[in-house]
Amino acid sequence: MKHLRINAVSTLATDRNRYCGPAVISSVTGMNTGEAARLIRSVTKERKVTGVHTHHVLKCMKLCGIEIGSRTWTYSLRSSGKRPTLAGWLKSAKDFRTKGRVFLVVAGNHFQLIEGRRYVCGITKDIVSIKDKSVKRRCRVESVYELKANGNITIPIMARKPKPNREYEKYRSSIKTMKLTYGFSAEFERDCDSPKYWVCMPEHAERLAEDLGHDLSDSHSCYNLGEVASRMEEMSTFMEEHFA
Image (cartoon, rainbow, N blue to C red; front, side, top):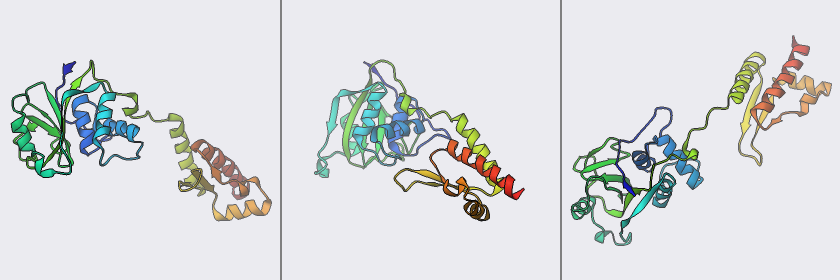
């Protein structure tokens, strides 16, 4: 085992999350908050990250190679009067709260990291003193976990931002062109048994296709952008033949 160090929370304009769960994961692993939120979603199976349970945060840290040390405090949630304030815990932990020892403190429905007299969370983002005015020292502590590293810290593949599908980008470009040129529409229907695109020509073209008994009169459902592009190419040919 080796000791961790806390760092400023890493954020990117195009890949970030503002909540405290991703922030503490970012601080000890080096991943940005968008990656941390993506890792949390892979664990919780939720579509977005706002509030998150402590055990989910700990599980994500373990996936990165971080272990929970032997010194752990958990206080009864039913007796808040017996739980120390953050200021009280900082004072009681003064002897072992030293440089190189990182503690995840859950207090006031908030995750924060403390190393010696250094503090960081999703609110401060930068490392500040434990006496900084942004530190909520009067909130009650629920639990404290010492974090250690078992070898190198890694960023799991499920945290990485997927690379854009270049083939789909090509489809989007051609679909946009055909929609502007011919007045086609493609509406995504999520609230159904099988999410799909509903693709149509302008109303006058739809009426003509129905009058002619053309295959396009009964062809409106597509299940991916490739199918949408292919359907619109058929529709484009129909438009050129009848409305040139």
